[in-house]
Structures are given as C-alpha cells and as structure tokens.
Image (cartoon, rainbow, N blue to C red; front, side):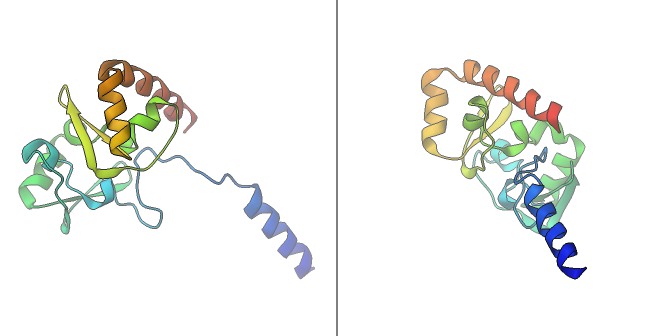
Length: 149
C-alpha cells in the first residue's frame, strides 16, 4: 500500500503545472514585489531605490517595500498610480506574449505609467519600434493572462 501512495504522490507532483501565474511578479520563495525596490522611487526620485522591510505594504497578495514611511503611505493612498504595468513582469516580453522576470534597474515611465524590463535590449526595442505600439501589444497579452487566472 505505501508504494501505491508514493506512486500516486509522484504522479500528482509531475501532473501539476510547472508555472502558476500570479498577478504580481514576486520572488520564487516569498511574496516580494519588484525585488524589494520602492515603486514610488521611480516617480519621486527618478531612480531605482531599495525598500526596507520596516516600510512594508501588502497589495494584491504581494509585499511591497519602500525606502521610508512617506513613500509607503504615498503608495498606500493610490497603489494603481505607482504599481508597475503588467504586475511588474517584463514589459518587452509581455508585448511578445511571454512572462519574464525583470531587472529593477531597467525601467521607463511613459504617460505616468511605470514599465519594467528584464534587459536593456528589451527597453531599447520598445523605444526603437514605438512605445505606444508595444504597449498595445502588451496590453492585449496581459488581458489574456488575466483572463486565464
């Protein structure tokens, strides 16, 4: 009997999907958004700023960290204004229909919205081929991902 249970358990493990989509891109072993960087810092300071656990806010099942209390409170008042597009996944890959992680140091703000990229090449592609067109592509794919959630 234990051998049958073991076989059943192993079969269940290998039959589950390898990738589960979460609306917010977080770490593999925790719920930290943006690799712990402060989402408001991109708007306020114009740069990537690391957040601290002491200034934490829970939003959409993810832990968001901020550089200081003021930044945390600013985000808490209007998270949609500061949260990145596509849940903090790579915008370039989203425009191609894929989910990929980001480098929090590669980003852009376009029409008051924050976009992240996994590599500088992806950001360059967006600029070179037209940001508005890439946003249109990414928005379409993002809606497909949300619909499957």
